[in-house]
Length: 385
Image 1 (cartoon, rainbow, N blue to C red):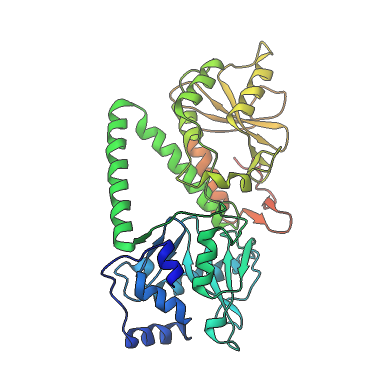
Image 2: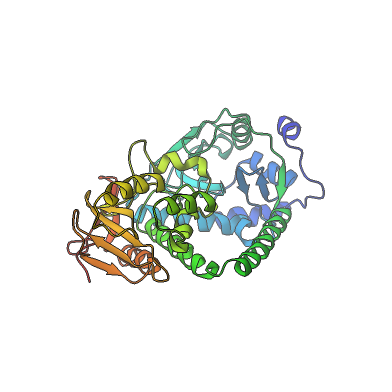
């Protein structure tokens, strides 16, 4: 604990749980907890280890970090993931040697003890489990030794940027205050943007539709973090679209600039080198530069509509286009080498919404063995009107 105090001084005025309060929490969870974890909570309280790890406490005024509720919610998420047949490399508490969560990252990775009933809780191993539930790192424990290893960069995980880290502890009340201030600043900027951009509200609808889609993907078993693409600046997007003779297209600008606050350093997990990001069964989402290169190839044909932008590829050959003309920005599924659409959607929002509905209804899902999206028979992108 002394080493941890030197690396990360505890905040002042921390309220310590009483023995009776610890007993109540341990009774609710169903097991005695490691003594060094309780010692940490008594010194630091609920809060964030820098930006690395959120730690709950029995006395937290915040429901998300109230220890018993945190454990219950986290165990439910793990069981739901297993029910979806996602990889689960360990049992789940209260199964013997099961995962018993004690902290989580902002990206949804969870830190757990392996709660072995045959061992003293002070000797439990620790597992850092990625949000895709397949990647993990183990540490001999106990809790504080694992935390020190994480801060010093000695605990290597496949889903976190390697340390060491210069961290300070942020109590939960201060963390929520900062988050509220951030949201207030976001709203202020959004209001200013709405006044300056006549299409701001429509662009927000596109980004909200993209968010609903990736959330539906996650619920359908996709191991991908909630992210659509590495965000490009609006100026970069506009410059490329202008080179493509499309000009201003707020729908495409909104699509390519959306990133949803996800840690972009994890993009390599989503997009293996040399491959487009798969965004549905047979649906590939190339980068804006790759889409521009394809546009230039197509534009060499004199009869090709200059307002058609190839933003997705289907089945390896057929293209999905956004019609760049305002205000509709229709979406067309066009067979390779043809000029007649096989299917169309009224807007980009409608198209993204259609894909989200396919995931939500179970027609599309992630196949953990094939490691790709698959569609129910008759529910390919070109099968339904």
